[in-house]
Length: 410
Ligand code: FES
Ligand code: FE
Image 1 (cartoon, helix red, strand yellow):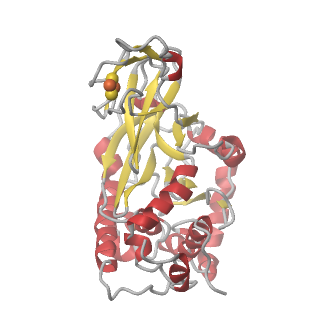
Image 2 (spheres, protein in one colour):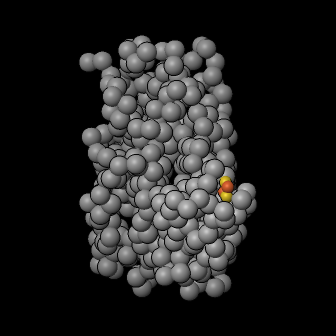
């Protein structure tokens, strides 16, 4: 890194976007990986992706590859995808089913629980028990598979996310199944991808389909979270929201919002709100694309957005849900993936109808975020002032800088 921390800190201005190096530098990306990405619980997949013993799927984050695999006891485990002999990649397919994991290089063989079963011609003092696959912290929570790359004890999962139990239970995430997966690899720093998702200032100019499904005053006030818009914007939307909350609560829906500040470990967010009048679901005509999910007995015209961290979001309509993964890979590349979920028993769901809104929206986000990165690469880029509808970015920036031991001057 040619810039010292002091030089970087001097370029920080509260209420402005970050200086260029934060979006381009390999050294800062390494800091981001070490101080943030490797210490957070990251939503890596859904248990329904690997329903049978031996099913596995790979999850890539930074330089790491994690094998998510179902063992003979039916439990989901997570292991680094590297052989303990000389480090070869173990699984090269992105997903599959295996009775054992056999290294393609010299055929060391591991069980589904990561234990080393066989290794040919090893010296007498070689101990197989010391050479199992390296486990990665993992947790299946309401069907959502989380991993944590921390080499130390990670943040306590239940203490961090336990308050979401009732919400996730009501929406039926544990009994859901993946209906479709969309991949939108984005040539931009992960913070640009996250920042784009944490503001709805761009919704109106960039997302005609998304805006067609949502009330304009809701997008202005709370489009990207409970306090993402100007304070006064709630004046027109507040009464609409309160009336809906009353009806939804009477139908048994657990309510409540969460709006974490910069001092928190995971910057969680929970926002529940209405969709455009007459819209039951986020589809082109507002009609459902699948059957009711979870515990609900009837349509309630609401929508839930929950962030476990800036990298891991879920959105739930009444009939389908989406998992958004924003996964840092290199300084200027980020994996963006959406997993669409329906009720585990649903049969006649309409994938095309379900993905209409968010597939288009995410392709638009890919374009605008990549254009954002390209502009920032110019040496004439300077940090720009945030609008009143980008308040979530100020919070995110403070949260981010705190992890790097940086802060705005004054
Ligand atoms: Fe895997 Fe040699 S590197 S068996
Ligand atoms: Fe967007």
